[in-house]
Image (cartoon, rainbow, N blue to C red):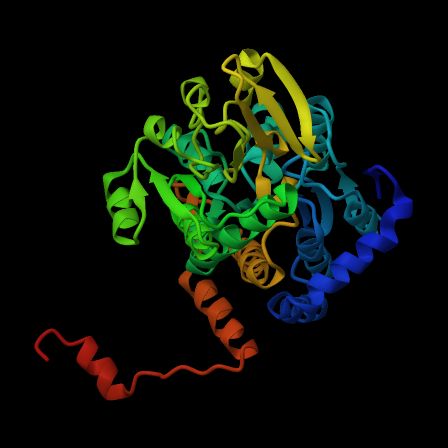
Length: 418
């Protein structure tokens, strides 16, 4: 076992966090019980790069219970929790991560998990897949396949696959119904405002909230902002999504117009340069900007630093930038993921579904390793049976039952002439 963490003595605090989420993640608990008995990942090395907090740690322990040799790092320097990393090392896992890693340290840590020669890669944002293809091509031969957690990572994977550069199959976990319909909408919606509220200690009711992007994450952020009493404005590039926003009761504007009236700005697009110098220059004094997309490129913080005449720490995890016009623009968590860099991420019950999809998708790869990589198309949807299994288990834990079709109903639905 090897590791590179801040302080192993923090492990007990991390263990308390992991125990709490475990108590609220019945799906993963049931999978852990099965994996403990069947050991499906015996002799399998798994490299994992996901936001390293308690819920991710429990996923790691579930996979380890299944016999996997785990090599773990974080997918964002500001979301790693040092006590959680210490708890995993105390439990015998290989962990390379610490909070607020420099770019050089982050690269070293991600490199460590690839150097181990993984058979399965569990990624969040695509950094591990990108790294192994570009810097460790000799390790690709050992990879059965992998799973991608988030929209941004899937965008990168599809680009690689289209260019025929993706060398092993990747399961698009984010596209599973039990992931994006719940994690992206309800998880992001709640956790973003948890991060904003605990960091700013400001009221949301009566203010203008600008949500950039109306995908499933944007829908969740806008819905929760409305619930908090805000007037919500949506910016979009997709006319269909813009119409959805209008019919959901929100205003739709171009960013250059929304920038003039917004009090809070939340970017959730997966793209870069969403809020730029042009917008900063017309924002109101005291405006608060943050990002809920994977990478810290949506709010152009570099441009804000360049045009600022003064900067100051306005509050813990909030940097203020004074512009030449005398107005202050505030940015939470350096423009990194606000729900993780300024909060604890999605609720445990939500990640219970997402990580159940991850665990079962990894199992699917191992069970089908001899056939799954044959196709030239290397991006794979989560099999429907996994989605259904997760949904059925979740309903069972909620003590809820649903109807089933009768034979006559099945026949009716599958008949073309009634």
